[in-house]
Length: 328
Image (cartoon, rainbow, N blue to C red; front, side):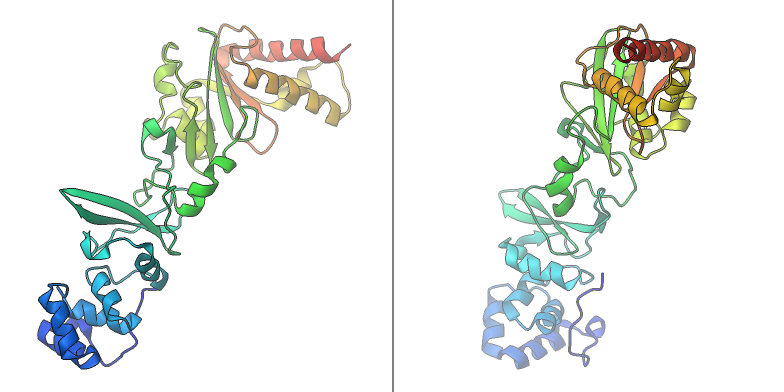
């Protein structure tokens, strides 16, 4: 995005001193008015005020923006002036750090404003000038949402648009695309999280299975950059799963193992119905004595991840259930 630029090409603001800027302001707006603002200690940097007065043609707006970073897009300044925030009390705004929304990469800036009594408020604005009280923070585990694709310049909050849409974009059911459901066969528990666009969201009542031995660390969210949730959120679970001894069980593996053949559409829909029933179950179903993962993050039918030693048993159970329910 291009920065706001004053229209008066006569001035080299970076080479101008306070006295020169003050004189230009007096010529443009009158010595009496400029003197009144100066007496109130509202003109702290005459060069900045001249810069923004030339950019926006309004002295009061220029005074409010005088301490702000000059590299922001025009619509950001215009929106700041419309927010009603006390911009004159903004702090740490001369060299704003540019963040990117972790959901869509929109540029964002955090504005800190001194509210008095040792209290500061923090507000977010994006490159289009959008601000909202509905900003979603994604860096706090207590908030149940986490930015798995942790690049250095990502914001800890979603932009206004993503904040507004994120709860509609995440899957609504555990059998919807984007869900990862973990069945702890050893403890008969089920936990789950969902991934969307590099973000992870987990359900409080679905992610408290801390009695699963080594799986506690494997499913810790947030966690190390190589943990399972990060691998799924960045569409790269295969390498991680291989590192912990897990292999993938595809839909085609199940269908190839069936002793019967029907139309492709028919037996695929039957497979998906079985898997959906397992995913939506509130306890491990069927009662297998090992942990397995139902993966709805791919573009095709759901698949499974399971320890290599348990692959054959899981495959056999899927085939048995298929035959019991659909071979009659």
